Amino acid sequence: MKLKSLKIGIFCLMLPCFALAQNDAFTIKGKINTSHDGDTIFFIFPNGKTVVKDSTIIKGGLFTLTGKISIPGVSYMRLGKIQPANSLDFYLSSGEVDIITTTDSLKDATIDGNQLAKDYARMMIGLRPILKGKMSYYAQFRALPPDQRKGPEAKEIALKIQGVNKDALNYLYNFIDQNPDSYLSLDYLEKSAGSLIDCDVIMPKFNKLSDKLKNSEKGKAFYDRIVASQGAKIGAVAKDFESVTPDGKKLSLREVESTGKYTLIDFWASWCGPCRAENPNVVNAYGIYHDKGLNILSVSLDTKAESWKAAIAKDGMPWNHVSSLLGWKEPAALLYGVHAIPQNVLVDSNGVVVAKNLRGDELLAKLKELFM
Image (cartoon, rainbow, N blue to C red):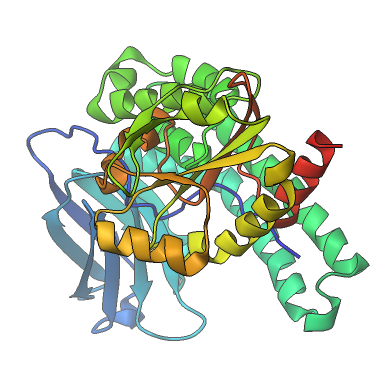
C-alpha cells in the first residue's frame, strides 16, 4: 500500500533564497538545569545548500553558540547522545534565539528572541501534536506483518493518515492567513505546495501575503513557479514547447499531439532512480495503447547525451524523446514548473490537459477509461 506523506518538509534546504539583512550572524543562548554542566549540546542547521553541524558545552547551566546563516530555516539541537533523543527543533535566522528550560528536557523549553523564532514556536504549538498523531499511524502501519500491508487494516490506517494530512494543511493554511507578514508564512506555503503545485489552491494563499514577502527574492521565485504550474492545470491548454531529439532534430509538443488521440508528456532523467523504476510501467502502457492513439513525448533533464541515449535504449522506450541537455534548466521543465521528477502530463489531441502525474496502475486505469 502506498501511503502519501504530508507535503510539509520540516527540514527543507532546496528552496529559493530569501534576501536577508546584511548581518547574517546569529547567536543561540540557552539555559538548562545545572545538572547538565559539562554535557554537550549538538546543533544541526541549514546554511544555503549545506547542513552545518556544531556543538557547545554547558557551563553553569548556560550555553551559547554563534555563527552565520545565509537562509532562515528549521534547526535542531540535541542534548548528549542518549536514546530516546533529548532534542528540540527551532527556527534559526540572523539575530538572537533564546532557549530556556528549567527541567532536564529540551522539549519543555520556551523560545524567545527574534520574531521568526517566536513565530515558529507559536506555529508548532498546534502543528506538533498533529504531526505526532501522524507518526503514530505510520508506526501502526510499520508494525503490520508485510503480508497484511495491503489488507483492510492497512487501508484504514491509510485513511487516518490522509485525514491527519488534511488537518495539518488546514492548520498551516490558517496560520499563513493570520500571519501574512511573517517570512515563515511564505516559507511554509512553499513547503506545503511541494514540487507539484496546485495553482488553484496556492495562488489565493500567496496573494494574501504582504507585498514585502511577495516582492522578496524568494517570493518572486515562488510566484514564477506557481504561474508555471498552470501549464499542467487540468482543463487548460498545455503550453507548447520545442526541444531537440536524440538525433539532433527539432520536435515540438504540437507536432506530437497532432498524430494521436492522447499524448503523455513525461519528464524524467537517466540519473533519476524513481524515473527508471517507473519506465517499465510507461513502456507497458505504450505497448497496450499506442496503436489506439497514445503518443509519448519524454523530456529528459539529463546533461550528458551519452547517458540519455543509453538509458532510452536500455529501458526500451520506443517513442519521441527530446532534451536540451541543460538539466534542471531544461526550458520545457521550467515552462511546466517541474522541480521534481518523475512527473507527467496527459493531454488530448487539442492539447487540453486531462490528467497529470499518473503512475503505475493509475496510468493504465486512466488510459483504459479514455480509450473505452
